[in-house]
Length: 111
Length: 347
Image 1: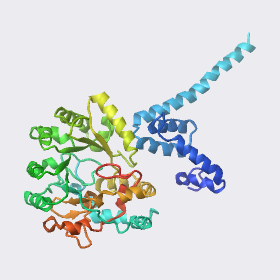
Image 2: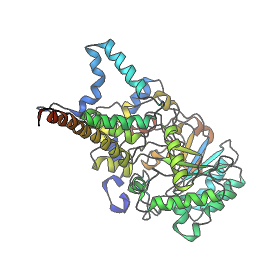
Image 3: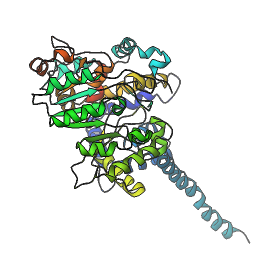
Image 4: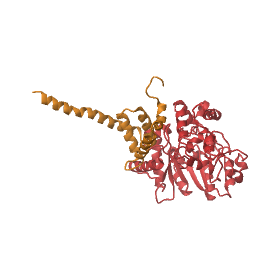
């Protein structure tokens, strides 16, 4: 794993961030745990949202964790891929919608 | 697909499996014995036999990829009527209330129905681990739902997912469709409805190297999907963790998931689940009459020990009720997360 930024083994060490700042880490992990509890959304729905967000922010640790997590919570391949397409649509859409801004500017400065 | 035994695969030898399992140091996980010691649960002792599980044979019409029994059509080891008779004598005048029949496909044993009738006459609660497809495999099995109903047999059936792709990937091409057909036949004779005493419980096994999620959540999802898609009802869903034995062990090794899976199970060790492991109130009888603490130990050839009789012909309830359970690294499968047993989550 030398000469790479990401080591899959580091995912398990996430909790070690408490070493440099225990109080903030505790607050974060308590919050994190509560967020993923069954609520108005099911744990499976939350896992699929996390999977989609993981792809939007392109976090390898999160993709790893929430692929397993989604499977464990009963999601299937179709649902997981649809979640990623939602992420892709929003990312792509976010670029494209700025096209309106470009068009506005074009219209502003051209005859 | 042939069984590992039929392929003369190296993992068909239990010693090879035990060698892989025993080497926990190279994965960097603790021994199961140490884990139990840390919570003052070693030696693990029986709390008294309540469930008498009988594996009536390895013959099966399916060859599921995760099967810990390495069952299949090419397996010929089945229990004789003489051994069944010994089982009946052993439990006749005892407080053991439940007999759990498993296999293979237990229904393929030619003496299966006779055995159920005898147990039923004895007033025992009978559970059958039915793979569903056997019901539609051959006309001679089509009346199984009616036979089960007559003897109020609790039917426990594997259905790893409510879609064909995932189910068939684990259990074989076309299994999902046949399972749905069989579930409808069970529903038709009165199984699996809220107001019926005919219990139909499904088993969810993960279809890969991951642990099962919340039993409650998955049951809700399964009930909704099977009702909406197929008008099928059932009573409970049991989530069961795949143990690293036989064909599932082979899958883990070949797919390169073994170390990570074992780490995951060990990391998820749950003391509450350890207190409630099924081997403490179960005795498992093999097709040849040998005695084991559970069906998993049976498949690893780990017979009851520490002075207890090891064969049904020498059955001694007092000794077996206080026996020390044989443990190994595969036991992490029953103590991980919400725990796992033949009756689902334990914690």
